[in-house]
Structure formats: structure tokens, C-alpha cells
Length: 395
Image 1 (cartoon, rainbow, N blue to C red):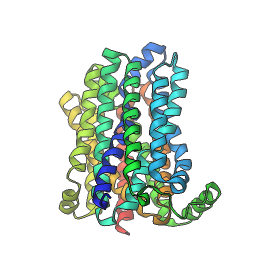
Image 2 (cartoon, rainbow, N blue to C red):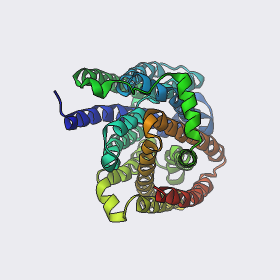
Image 3 (cartoon, helix red, strand yellow):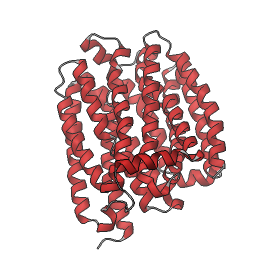
Image 4 (tube, rainbow, N blue to C red):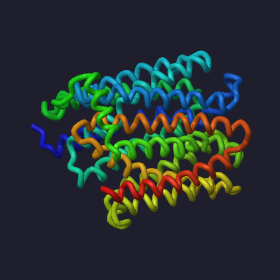
């Protein structure tokens, strides 16, 4: 029989691999936009539908994965979601035109929606609050690494292997994670894999959601999350394109520089406990995190030297994950009795915000307005940081 600590470590590793694949698939298309636009003879803004369609589906399906996880068990639902990602990623590699590619990205987003948020909810069920920031940061280390890999490999594959082969390889990665999750579930104690005893189906879920939304703190966390998604993930999707246009970087180089965004996240996630102590808790994390995001976006928007662009990527990633991990902890605690539903609702609002941000940014990219758009996003985040600082301070 495994100890509780062994269950936690083993589960975190396997769910981390699944999260790695999920984030890699999400960011895979970011450095491909120019190449996809050329292949399908559309503008870069039109090609960005492969990003926003994924985000919309990811957000919508959260409304279903929450009750599924609470009713049937989070690990079971995660396992099936990972297997579906393997299948859809393989089919995506066969898309013959942009329309079909966008449709398959919708299916990919719908399947991937059941991985990271339910993994966060499972951690919320199993890990005490005083260790949750650190444990969620470890999971975030996997997802950030996946984002970095997706950004680099998407550019590399588009230039050297072909974008179809990129999706085929991601499919193989998902298949490996699905197998490991199946083995994990067989080895875990029954208590670690069973459903929440209070889960009673979709009717109860929607009634419970409405009840949750009557709580002011839940509404505040969700509203902040949606705005965060628009102001951070909207610019993020177009940073590789901006690097190519601003600094004449190749596709691979732009994807490689974008990895520094993830490196910034890793610097935070690997030292989360120390950052908490150094900065005086969650309010300090919010203040410093927002400052770095604002600085990073302004540098990215207006710098004329590649080295400054690299610094901007790192600063933005470091600040974002410092802020976002704090918001994730808030999400796991805003409705403990229905944590699966609460966390997936959090993720739903995050990706509704992302899809809105991407659609707005798509208008600016075709007009050459990205520097101004980055500046507006930076200003919005500065204002948002004030609200988040007050929200966290009311814990």
C-alpha cells in the first residue's frame, strides 16, 4: 500500500506529464501563424483562429468537466481526456485546409480542457492549504515546460519538419501519458480515485454553480481571472509574430526566444516557497508579479534591440506565473465543498478571456498595431493588479 506522500508524488509526476502535453499542444501553433497564413493564403490574423478556437472550446468544456470530475472521479476523467487528446491530435495532423484545421483545434481544446484544471482540483482535494502554493507551483513547472517545448518545437517543426509532423509527435506524447495514467489509477488506493460523495449530476451542478455565483468572493475571483486571461494570453499568442516582425527573426528563433517566457515561469515555480517568504506572502507576489508583467510588455512592444526583446519575454513570464499561481490558489479555496466545479469554472473564465484577447489582438496584428496593443494590455494589468492586491488581502 502506497503512503499518502508516495501517492502525491506519483500522481503529480504523471499528471505533470499530461499537463506538459496539454500546454505544448495549446502553444504549438503560436510560432506557426505566419507559416500557416502563407500555406493557406490567409492573413496572420485569420490564421490565429487556430489559437482562439482552441481557447474557446477549452473554456466552454470546463462547464462539463467540473461536474464529471466531481461525479466520476477526477483521475478517471483526466485519463479519458488525455486519451481523447491523443486521438484528436493525430487527426489534426491530417487536416487538408485551414477550416478543417480550426475544427480539429476545437476538438483538441475540448479534450485538453479536462487535464490541468482537474489536476489542480485533485491537488486541492489531497494537499493541505499551507502546502498548496508549493504543490501547484510544481504542477505549473510541468505546464510551463510544456508551453516552452510547444513554442520552440512549433517553430522548429514549421520550418524543418512540417506542422503536420508536430501534431503527430504530440499525439504520441499524449498516448504515453494516457498509458501511465491508466497504470497510476490501478496502483492507487480506492480513496484517491473515487468521486466526490456530494456529486449528483449536471442538474445539481448548475444549481450549485448558481449558488456559488451568489458569493461575492467567487464572482470577484472569476471576474479578475477573465480579465487576466484577456490581458496576458491575448498578447502572448502574438509575441512570436511580433518578434518576427520587429526583429526580423526566423520562425525557429522567435519560438526559441519565447521559451524565455517559460524560463521566467520556471524560475518562479522552482522557488515558490522562497518567493513567498522573501516577498511577504501572496500580496507581495501580486505586487511584484504585476510589475514584471507591465515592464515586460512595454519592453516587448517598443524595444528595438533583440536582447531587450529577450529580456521582455523573461520578465513577462516571471511576473505572470507569480500572479497566476496566486490566483490558482484562490480558485482552489473559493468553494472547497465543490472544488472540481470551482476550479474548472475558474479555468473556463480564464480561457474565455484568452479567446477574447486573441480575437482583439488579431485585429491589431494585420494593421501593425501590436506595440500599441501591448501597451494597452500593460496599462490594464497595472489597474488589475490593484484589484487583485486588495482581493488577496481580504483572505
